[in-house]
Every structure is written in structure tokens, then in C-alpha cells.
Image (cartoon, rainbow, N blue to C red):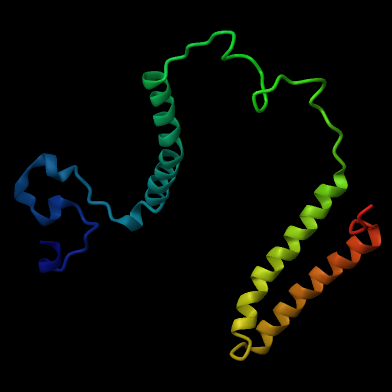
Length: 154
């Protein structure tokens, strides 16, 4: 009806059909532009539901289909079927962690440079400059790690 009469869809329904009565006069037609955050709220609720629904289903499944039956053997601590001997705490060198992080940085660098290598002939000078800045920052990180002695395996 709105498209045929050429009226603005944000007008009152009472203006479009005044013979309908008082109930329709109080009703306002809302467009998506008049409620800009409604779609964000719907997406936020869907995102929360997407995260919490599997957790709720797992909790329900655990309480319905697998009732707890604790006993001494089930609650015993074991590893590979053997009793634990001594303390499980082992001192871990942070150099292994730093070495792994450096590896991940340069591994991700290869992933980012692959599209550049594929489309090298069709790139503009600005894109080549951006890739050179990227490579320069990574080389700077490599020089820093080398100077700090992170890459020495001793």
C-alpha cells in the first residue's frame, strides 16, 4: 500500500488509513534506519547464544545421560595407568617459549608474504612499499632476537 500511494514508510498508519480507528493511530511504523542499533543487538544476542548453547547442551547432557558415580578407584590420580612418583612440577626454561614465539612470528610472515609473491607483477608501488615495511619490521625483530641471544640453543 505504501509503494502504490508513494507515501513515506515512516509516517503514521493513521495518516495512510484514517478510517481504521484509534488503535492504529497510536501505532508507529519503524524502519531499520530509525532503529540503527537493533541489528547490532540481534547479532550480539545470536553471538552469545552461539557460545552458550553448546555449553548448556553439554551441561544438560552430562546431568541426564552420565550421572556421577564417584568411588575410590575412579577418583584416583594416575598417568598412563601408573601411580605418580614424586613431584610433578618441573622447571621449564623460558628460552624454549621465546624460541617458539620467534618461530611462530616468522611462520606467519611466510603466510603473509605468499599472496605478495603470487600477485607481485600486478601490484602498485605503494603495495610494494607496504610489503617492504613489513619485511623491514620482521628483519628488525630478527636482529633484536639475535642480539639478545634468544636464537642461541645452549
